[in-house]
Length: 272
Image 1: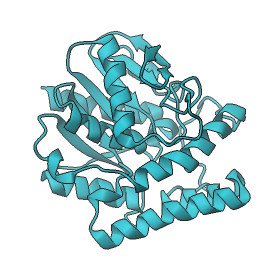
Image 2: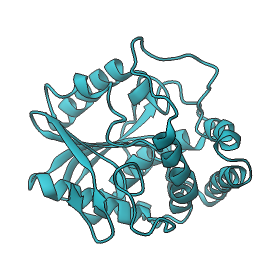
Image 3: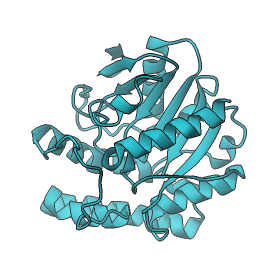
């Protein structure tokens, strides 16, 4: 556990080798990488954690929204608790935005960040940015009116996830929508969506960080959705190549073997 000003953060370390922090998407907590980790821990010491407000990192002020800058400070403190050396990082979706903040606020702490489909409307021009922020607010309205079951279809559409496609590797660990995941989804939609809409990320500052930022996309994520557009915009901002990973927005959980192999190759090339 790592203590912060307002909560104690649960984290887990597994494996051996260079430290790799994985910041999860959505409602994902430290256990969300259950199928990905076995394909990484022979080469990396993998650090995962429950983001503030999720699972075992419960807030002392439950109704308060944590900003993405505060989430980045949490990641900074978790890293500082386990190492003094620059770490590698995989950030997925919301986790990628936390990584972008971390690269700006604590540039020496992350040597390389793989930013997989960051949900960062601030990377976009004003029109698309406003449109996608309105989509997130619309999902919140659906949730407040009809609960999770009403919000899930629109959330999948906005992120380019097709629930009708049984696309994934064989033998995945079941991830039932139990009480803990439901509570995490509620926090994610009610509070983290607000944090995304109200984010303060300065895109211009990303070009000046010494952290190597590698934008990434899922191979099956439609180009019309905003997470694809944000990753593309990030690559344009940094004038760098975008890497494509197996699966879609949640490829790290739907295609863990292939995703881990691609991540290892990308990190090996970046650190060679």
